[in-house]
Length: 396
Image 1 (cartoon, helix red, strand yellow):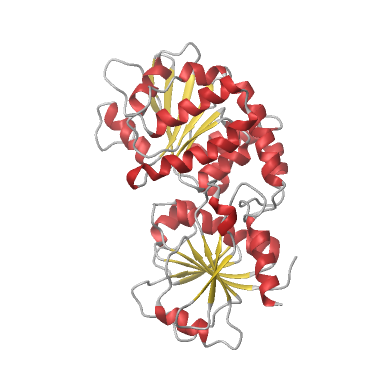
Image 2 (tube, one colour; image 1 turned 30 degrees about the horizontal axis):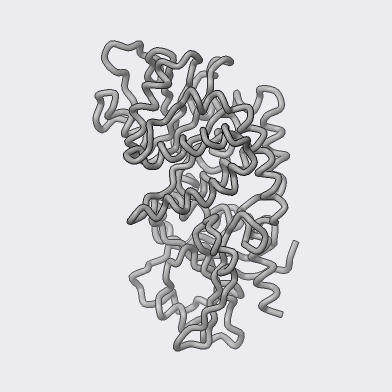
């Protein structure tokens, strides 16, 4: 436990849940594992409420899990007059602090350590740019760019102490799974089914994937949280505007849709702790954005990442940078299958259709590689600890 380092963490909710998902995990870990005093400033409490139901969407100041949560009015010139900056001020994902906030930081006898927490990337240039300083052109402030990453010399990834022990306890016996199914409001899936979690943006490759699951030789149970993918599936099944309804001519299952060997079960959008358990319980996880992408890696299960699309297909280069590292742990044939699957999922226009049968045949090899990958990441240290160490060194 470190001394009571004070921290202001600012978050703009851009992509529904990804930004606040990362910030909420980080804020809690800074408090619970490092003894920090954290104020989390968020501009959209409604999205935050989906991840943490205790959030009062009308509340201007509330305290949950030891974190002070404040509504951030980004249209205001500055924060309330009584605000005194913490020793560490973090801008999550270049959310741009107001000029009045920067002025208040500059007025301190000892200006805070000012960090821009960047988006996660495996691209080679990340290590070179990690922790670089950028002096403010007008004020006596220096901003440092802090990059999460997958190799030494970067900030690492969010990883709570004891996460492996929690996963191991969940996987021991059946009690953890039974509790999860009850909380999700579904019956326990058949023991011989391939369990798939599907958290995705709308995707042109989805219709083909659903059809492959329907005719697959093994049962597939797909658990779909509320959101864009669930809405798309509802539309594909002939029920626009509804997350799940049975399609014409197929058997109705009590809480979802069933056809051939495919069962689709809608589940509620769950808090982060339950989402980790969902990843642990499934055989394959389709994830999107950044937060679920990282949690899928800690789950040590085969997964498929849908990266957030960017202009001029810049995201594909980022996707390939990660695959170059991750697939190095797989034999060449299996690596090609995984690469083709990820590309088909992210860019179906320019790549052959996703081949579920080929992907399914490699699951055992993928599980071994996923475990080895997670062990490699653990050696980097975690993001929260690296942030605290960097700040403490700058304050000396």
